[in-house]
Amino acid sequence: MSCVVVGSVNVDFDRQVDADTVARLDADPAVPDAGETRAVATPPPGFDGEGTLGGKGANQAVAAAQAGAETVLCGAVGRDASAFDLRSRLAAVGVDTRLATCGDHTGAAYVWVAPDGENRIALRPGANGQLTPDDTRQHRQLAREADVVLVQNEVPVAATTALLDELAVAETPPTVVVDPAPADGAAPLVAHPAVDVCVPNETEFETLRSSLATAHRRGVTVVRTEGADGASVFDGSESPTEADSAAAVFTRPTFRVDAPSVGVVDTTGAGDALAGSLAATLCDGAGMETAVTRGVRVGSRACRHAGATDAV
Image 1 (cartoon, helix red, strand yellow):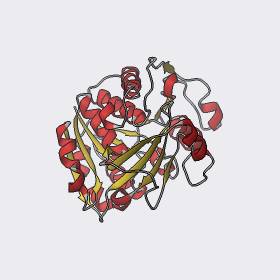
Image 2 (cartoon, one colour):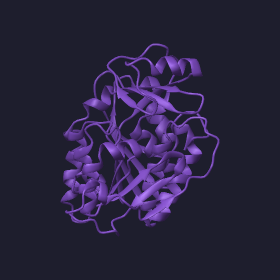
Image 3 (spheres, rainbow, N blue to C red):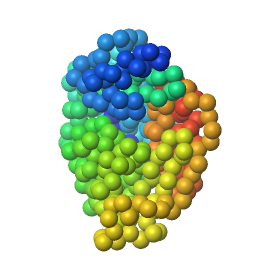
Image 4 (tube, one colour):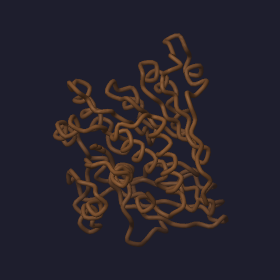
């Protein structure tokens, strides 16, 4: 059971903030909204420390490996990567890596964590933003031989779709899972013919609703993650047609999975834990209900700990 993850590698810097600071952040238009991830050109003030392993690609790869899948992460780091020990950190949790070196700076995420565990993230793409189609195409054979390929939208769409193009014409393609986060610019990933499963959160679902409806009509399973409420799954058994509007397509989920009640410390990485676990479970040949149930459980557990990859 093998899983290839194509995505971002970051160094995460977390800052716990009190209610007064949350109010100031809410009033600052330069700061991401609660629950939002926003790209920035320079680090915001007030963050220090050594940083921890993060990035949606790395987080999901760690989750897949910890769920039992043989996992390879394809992505990019900067020339400063050795200072953060990223390759050895990934190897220590069972993730093999195929990481191009692109530019000086590894991607970084600056995370404000509120008292209720809600986070807002300023994302500095760094090397992630420099990953090229040639970088990803060189992994086409590895991806073709995988059981599941998992991608997100924290690296250039052109780099990801170049690999998906190769999978779309493969004789025996893997199952392809897309986490369309961040939603801005993710429509080409959602609509790609190689895709089998899409895992948006509620905000991404609404932003990409039209593209998701189009994909769903051709058979893509949509797993809408809903935080503490679990997940709703639209697997195509309701047989949407071209005549159905985007609203009509998602009227009634095929099934829902409730999340267990947990004490929330930090929601950072919870969605990644869910996606990585779901992908690993599909690698094992399990059905969608089993995969989503396991993913929701793992994602909920991740909220009980601070940080992203340490939680899964």
